[in-house]
Amino acid sequence: MLKKVAAVLLDNVHPFELGVVCEVFGIDRQADGLPAYDFAVVAAEAASVRAVPGFTISTPHGLDRLMDADLIAIPVGDNFHTRDFPPDLLEALREAVARGARVLSVCVGAFVLGAAGLLDGRRCTTHWRYADALARRFPKARVEPHVLYVDEDPVLTSAGTSAGIDACLHLVRKLQGSEVANGIARRMVVPPHRDGGQAQYIERPVAEYREGGVRDVLAWMARHLDQELSVEQLSARACMSPRTFARHFRMETGTTPYRWLLGQRVLTAQRMLESTNETMEVVAARSGFANAAALRHQFVRSLNTTPIAYRRAFRGPST
Image (cartoon, rainbow, N blue to C red):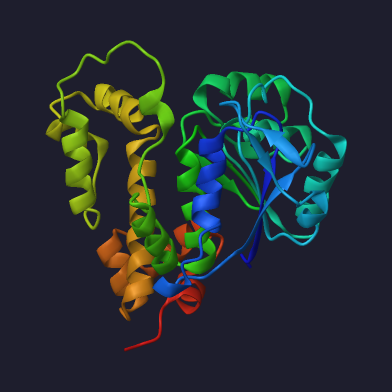
């Protein structure tokens, strides 16, 4: 369920990251045929919270508003990587997860979830500049610094700033289908899904390879998902050795060619299941899986559901 959503404010909140959550969940788009969310901004420390540029944000909602929220979002604030957080907020987050709610952090909002113990044993991410600090402060967390977001249901963490949009739209797509997520993205004038990760933004020496090589191959891969693709074949298209290609591919996308392909194939299968009545064998073949059994295996592994259940949940009325 995704109906009641709360964004938690702490002192020195960053307005853009708060705005991301407000834009996705706080705008009434029912006129466009999209669901409306019962959205509230919640003050965790005082009714009036300071924002980084020097203004204040006031809200009538306190932590009691978290008691029945389906999703609690934690936007970033200054010094989250070093400061302490209100014990009653941390307890409210633990109680929310225990009763089945989801929590989502934007950027270094992950430090709040870590302080609540919700990252222990879970994969997670944050802004690449603070990934090492997150790993040091919460050694039981499994920090992945190169991705845009991590979904370790019921805990979702996202990287810096606009990656919060990716995480929010991912959750909408997961729970309410691509039609809703695409509709929200269209209104926001943002892509409903971005490939790759934040590795492309990390400070590093300039890569010494021909401009466009990996990018051209990515476009070619996206057009040939239904074919058997090997690193040797892909590296030849990029005019690189397989080892060099694999290294530059990770630098560009934050992942391996195999994992990128797998993710794109799952996305293609999702779109077909949502928009067509094709059989599972056809969906599998066109999205690049050997057969329906392989499609089902990867669906369960990636989305924790079966293709049949996914189609049942997200396929619109037949026309």
